[in-house]
Each structure stands twice: as C-alpha cells, then as structure tokens.
Amino acid sequence: MRFMVIVKANEETEDSVMPTTEELAEMGNYNEQLVKAGVMLAGDGLYPSAKGARVAFDGSGATKVIDGPFAEAKELIAGFWIWELPSLQDAVEWLKKAPFRAGEVEIRQIHGPEAFEGIMTPEIQAQEDRLREEITSRNQ
View 1 (cartoon, rainbow, N blue to C red):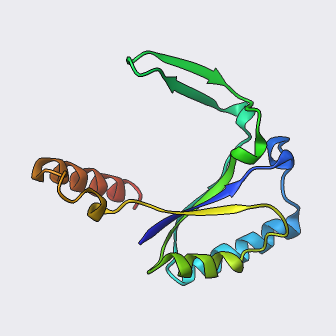
View 2: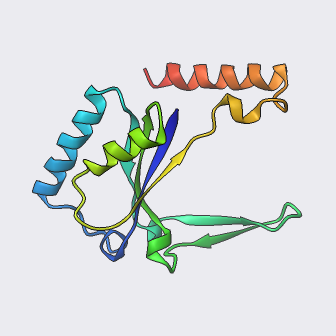
C-alpha cells in the first residue's frame, strides 16, 4: 500500500521560517532510515502558500484563479512524503519516529488499482500502465 504523509503548515512555515541546521540534520537522518528501509518513495517540503495559487472550478467548466497566501495555515500543507508499507498501522509506527516536536501530520492511503475495480476498462488500464512506465523511466 502507498500512503501520502501530509505535514501540516503552521504560522512559521507560512512565514518562510526555515528549520535550524540541527532540525534539518535530524530530518535528514530520519529520511535516510526511511529510504534504507525501502519505505520512502518521495518527499519534499513546500514553499508557503503566498507563492502558490488555487484554481477553482465552478461546475460548468469555468475557472477562477486565487493567488496565495491562503487564510487558514492549519489547513495548508508544508511538506509531504510518499511511503510504501503493508498497512496504515505500519505508517503510523514510522511516523511516530519522526523528529517533530509539535504540529500535526496526516496519513492518507493512495488509491491503487483495486479502488477502480469494475470501472477501469482495459484501455484506461493500458493508458495508466503506459503513463506509470513513462514517469518511472524519467525518474531513473
């Protein structure tokens, strides 16, 4: 199973306060453990919402662009990981080892092919497989 681990933003991350050298080293060591264990597939921090935008869709196909910053820091994302583990409980156990001292982190399972059973046509599955192969070959 793949999981997205979502690190919630706070006032400091939204104010572009970077981690200390010590905090960065701790996170680097934690990431190294994740990689060596074969858990971590990807992960990065995100710039504050002031450097972002949202695109709202109104149901008819029209769009509206909303430039950041966005109001509620606690509803924003400061960073993420993509992990592969056998279960949600395994993801929780890995996250408990993270060097965070405060804040909140959310874990969400990523849909696999089983989620689309019965609605995925062979043509759509072939397209999905081709796109995954293309992405994988680009990242090598």
